[in-house]
Length: 243
Image 1 (cartoon, helix red, strand yellow):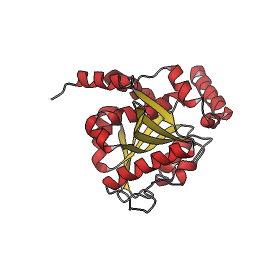
Image 2 (cartoon, one colour):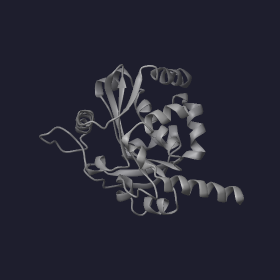
Image 3 (cartoon, one colour):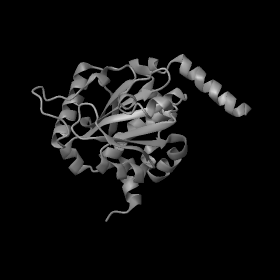
Image 4 (tube, helix red, strand yellow):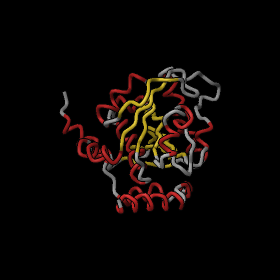
């Protein structure tokens, strides 16, 4: 049985050969949608379709990021996440959990809503650590956007992984989820509280300010974080200091 420390070292070693790419071009996005389809069909969580691709209207929202993760220039995994905030009250979790997420946003919080995490099957067998490498993209987004919470909308059998390794807490039991055949539960991690714990345990989740800027500011979606969000956060911090 492998010890945790060598595992952490192996994770960090991946970054030398990993490239995180936001997908904007049609060909890039299509490759991600087809990878999704293969992975979801393997798990029997979606129905087959003639196009052999899996996408939905949430992919087209202007607060949505689609990332492909490349190992040695080969697509190995993908993740989608929405930055849900008072200026962008839209995203999968916002719609599926209307009794929970809207209340958080109305209280001025920003949450990262990762979905569609998939890893190419044969690469999973070769590199079982790839799910951690993939989740890192959403973790960096949570830091960049100063999100108070990162969500995990997962099947019941995946809850333990997120709760044990990342400190997520369950907010509700599984319920029906758009376009999926299996119910999904909602977990959440308080990022200001959990971030350092996760980085200490898995140093791969550390990222520099420069790396985050290169990922999120050099793209068409940079316009998403609007000026009113910056102003709101400044006012919130000022009130906390004054108190």
